[in-house]
Image 1 (cartoon, helix red, strand yellow):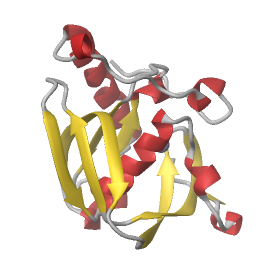
Image 2 (cartoon, helix red, strand yellow; image 1 turned 135 degrees about the horizontal axis):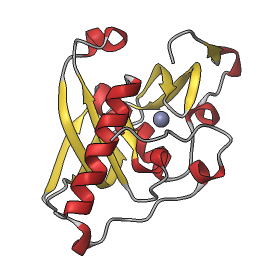
Image 3 (cartoon, protein in one colour; image 1 turned 90 degrees about the vertical axis):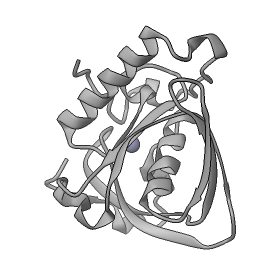
Image 4 (spheres, helix red, strand yellow; image 1 turned 60 degrees about the horizontal axis):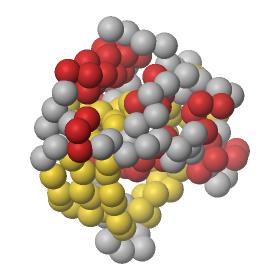
Length: 170
Ligand code: ZN
């Protein structure tokens, strides 16, 4: 079911999300929430969405993208990936800069620098631990989504505010 996406100015986006507890994995409630997140993200044409963006303060995000999204055509493919209670650390000091946008910050993009090489670990909806390393778009989106879990929206990460610009592509 497509849900309303909270937008910047809504205080609920500034609240820190709670970890998913053991008994909440692999439940109908969790799969229904994830389905709603995917429906909402697909409807809005996003590549990632955090549960907090639909008003649910749990450390859950999904990421999905492929070449059919013209905005991200060069990035490659990522099948639907459910990311719960993620933990990340930068592997070195290298940063990458990207013109980020957000479903909760409509019609606006801005240049954000983030650590490039990341070691990550998270749980999927069945409670299985997944870990790896990446230096691409996947971990950039993951870092953006973890910010949501901590109540941070990308405009506060934009160092050069002159790069924060209105767009015609929500
Ligand atoms: Zn966002």
